[in-house]
Length: 450
Image (cartoon, rainbow, N blue to C red; front, side, top):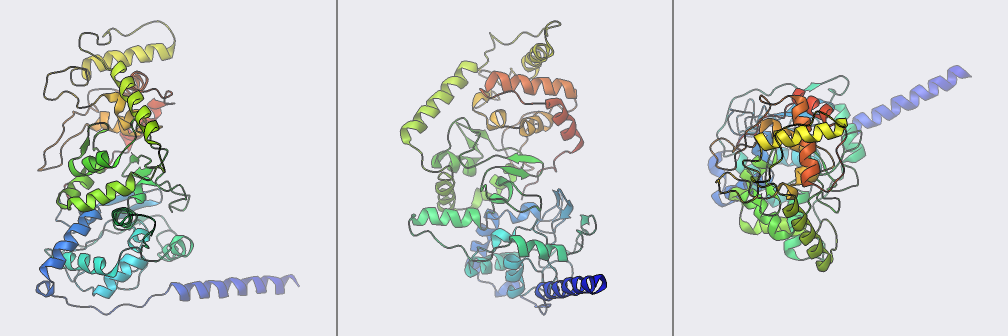
């Protein structure tokens, strides 16, 4: 009896696996040989703008490498995946891909040979793109300079390196279908929603993920990207001043919003990618993102904005009243740490981050308005203190030196804790020193111009 039961269980498992394998199997699409000269220049120009909104160059260009030739490391909780070569090289890139093969990859996460792609490639967002937009991106990529550069193998532990697991992930989490406009919203809002949730794949960083690496239902509730916190864009946004469409547009267009600060970390190449995107597209994105927190009473927004600005001004440091450079030697550990952090701030930070400064490098906004200072986690502030803020190669922008080589872990922890207490009305971060130590050991990849 037991033997027959086990045999039945094995048979059911075998049938189930066979059915899943049959569902997951994809045939190879025959190679093509598209000519760059065959693509309409206007379609190519459109594709360039869409590829910029999708930040294609960021994940498909390694540091110091040729554009779109691959090799950029994408670190995930399951291992490292390297962006592949998507130049029109026939041997190592996608030069032998037909448009049908490209569209299948973008919408279903399957390459020309029929292999399943891992969702580090955000096809769960790209599946929303229209046929015409995918055609334009294909035309753009097929007119880039071909680069012969072999793809780096995945660094995933078995059995996750079996691509059948990617097929299982799709079965559970991939929802196919082109974006459907909301008839209750304006054309600009719908255009922004299409770009943000589709080609822009903003939720890939700004939405938390479950244990399987899929975005959960807290859309735009904050996540991680390249070792940095991607703050919540919904009602849980940690920004002291509520974002509005104009501030979001300024941030995306110039990398700076006067009530929020400069773009840093992974947002720097994103902003640089967007520099040639038309204003209309950025305005549409800003319109949509500004509605993510939900309906807001204008009077309440004005009250919150005034309160945040008043608090920030009340906490600003002036040169004449900067904190003492003499750390306390008595009192509780928290008191000593705060005093030590104040002294470090006075010596290393106050010359730029003070009120009423005349230096051209003086801080453009109060630290009290800074999102990293007000976030529920110190990761971004610590990354900025460790590595500083620097313009991307060949670009111009804000400069802040990094202090990784000048300050110890404990000094950086004391500094971060002081900045939190001085410039934020939020509760203290727990165990900052452990976060500093962890981030020292796991530096984020260097940011490259797209």
